[in-house]
Length: 285
Image 1 (cartoon, rainbow, N blue to C red):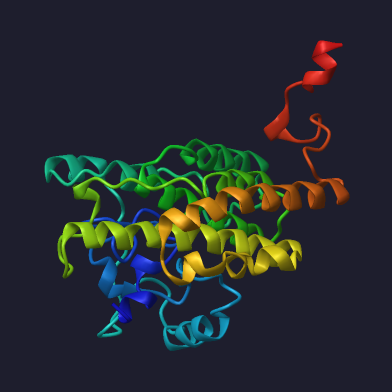
Image 2 (cartoon, rainbow, N blue to C red):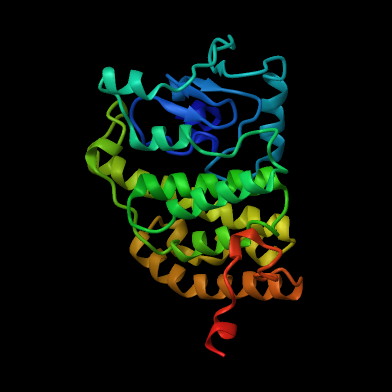
């Protein structure tokens, strides 16, 4: 499992899989490619799910240096390049390997080189917002990964605070997993794997909040996991969930107050395509 920390399974660009979650092939948004063996694949753009980027920056930079000579995906063990594979919905259905999450991610509208296109950025935000909510564990994992990818690509908190607010709101929600969501090629019982999957999702989400804190310059959010006391140390989810219910109120307030102070909290609707409706107060008046 240690090697998999630097594999596509632990990278936010492969949104719907983790070390425990997601059977079969993955899909890389960075290279727009199907990943046939996600636990044996990597690249120099690795963005770890389990910890915030600024915490593991040194190790990630070393990894990037090791694979700097490759433009695309690489086999983690042999360090041989892997040919890019375009997604084919037809192929997936014909081979009875169709995966709704892989299919959705393959149609994700945010691509490198289009970061400054306002219409494309709006479409990507709408896509991410549509992934928020619910109790499906893979959906939560994909949502958190997409938020973190968006935040990293933009390199700023300004266009991301609404996405992060939605992420924070779901932190106390217990992820649910169908047996088919859990890898069947790892040791241990399905119940043990389901428990590990819960923590895969949690750390992907809390690291997203901490990365937002880094971009926004909010130190309390940068080290949010340190505020969760003993429940996190003991991996006691019921106790941690109660702590999260209280902390999410505080973290939400911090995000909103900071955005207001910077005059970025839902700015003039005439200049923000994502909020083009009239303010409710104006309609009531």
